[in-house]
Length: 501
Ligand code: ZN
Image 1 (cartoon, rainbow, N blue to C red):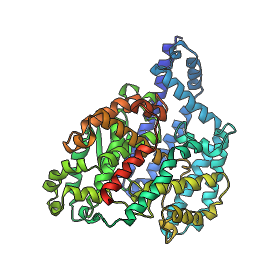
Image 2: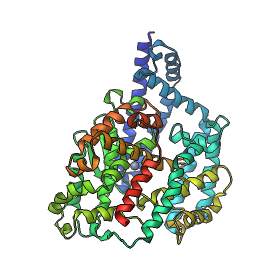
Image 3: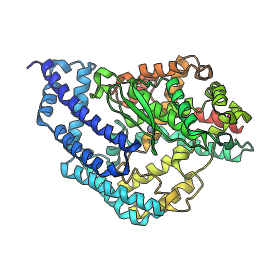
Image 4: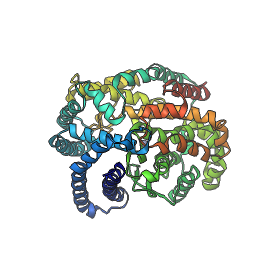
């Protein structure tokens, strides 16, 4: 058989798997947005059957044969060809699959499901003790998984790399060193200042139908295509691609606070633009997929923070806001800008401002590293958490509910995931600075309501490349330099200077 015929056979196999995956994603989307309580049990059965079918396909020996044959063929001789990219990435995926024994995969799935339920219950009671043995079991299994993946190297590095190719603890530490040094000083400056931005300007009575309409208007305005996507409501906002031409984003609205729906919409629409900008001819293949968690998060955070918290955007939006929600008329665009950029220490990561956000991440990344390297026992997490918060943020939780139980990542087996949030912000700052140069000033464009040029720039530099380049290389190609945290730090310094003097 010619390499072209082998490749066509491989694409058919992989696409069928992607279609099955999108069937599962459709059911999951429905579960989060529409499913009545009576349907939960049957939905679990549907998803379990699909998971089994998907697993069968992933380990299909024919697929492995095709990948191995193609890897040495003339079709893949030029590594820049899209066929070579897809074969390279599919091979990586099955080699990863092969390293971890099936029994361990199944045990992890089962134990993390049980641990997640235990975490939810413990969080409800705001007490860590009953969750501790579950966390210990999850960590033990993640250590076993990391041993399979690490090729004898550092265990935590293996898990980091699993979420963000090329990442390691040492590289992460080096990259974020300027943030570790600079952010606490910025926080101090804001705390010590006499200026106090008033958060009250975003609060009031904002009818939900009007907020939803505004969110759709905003998402369309930045380029989200409603012919190929939808915006719905869910408790935990998310974005999911159900196939080429069908991207679902969800948001959450609060009738008493305009900023909740505004920022969740921009965040998810940022993920949605990335999804909609992927190459449709490569759908279901690595060249048509998001390259990493960090890059994906850079896209959402770029729209949420660099666009959504810019003075230029608020100036442009001001007449629109007054027309839609007249009650804001007592304030002005500058007041909303200041309110949405205020800096304050908090205990909850998900509600943190842009500056303290990373301090929350550093507490978590330090602890998960210690857990995985057996330098910290699961039962000692609450005390270590409190110590970390006192040291980095100067506050301590009153109970585990607002402390170490606030995030479900560890229960779900996501160890080495938190750093991708900070990486996402570092990448977003680099992309924003490069786009600012290329587009002749982002602030000016945003104030003029010119939102599409940024979307088009990202489509060209990021979206269309799929998994062609590793994350750091993708950023370097897009911006002309390797990602560094100084760009983010400088932007945040300028922000504190403007707000707090
Ligand atoms: Zn996100």
